[in-house]
Amino acid sequence: MRTRCQHPSENWLCLSCKVVLCSRFVNKHMLEHYQQTTHSIALSFSDLSVWCFACDSYLDAQLIQQLRPFHETAYILKFGQAPPFRSVESSRVEDKPAMDVPSSS
View 1: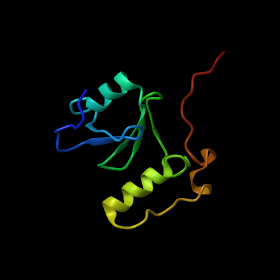
View 2 (view 1 turned 30 degrees about the horizontal axis):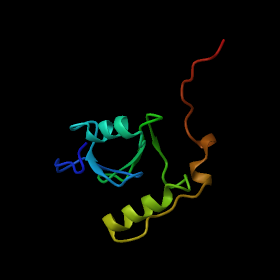
View 3 (view 1 turned 90 degrees about the vertical axis):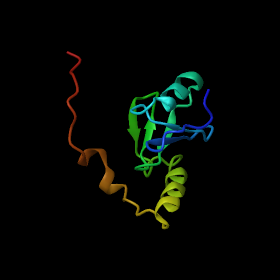
View 4 (view 1 turned 90 degrees about the horizontal axis):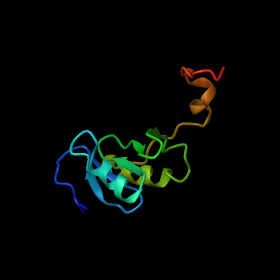
C-alpha cells in the first residue's frame, strides 16, 4: 500500500489513519486505500469536502459533530481563519429540495 501519493492535486486525507492519497478521479489511490482498509471517511484538500466511501456520499462536516474538528483545522490551515458557521436552521432537511425517491408500492 502507498504511504504517500505523488500526484500534485486532488489529494485526500484519510480521517482514520491520516495517510494522504489522490482521489478516485486521478489515480484512485484513496479508493484503493478504502478497499484495503475499510477506512471510509476522507477529507479533500482542494475544497475541504468530506467523502464517505462506505455510503458513497458527501458528508456535511459542519453539521456532523465528529467531523467538525477536522473541517475546522483544515479550514484554518488553508485560509488562516476559523470557518464561518451555518446555523442548524439554514441546513434543515425540510428546507432542501426533495429528491426523487422510488416508491415502495
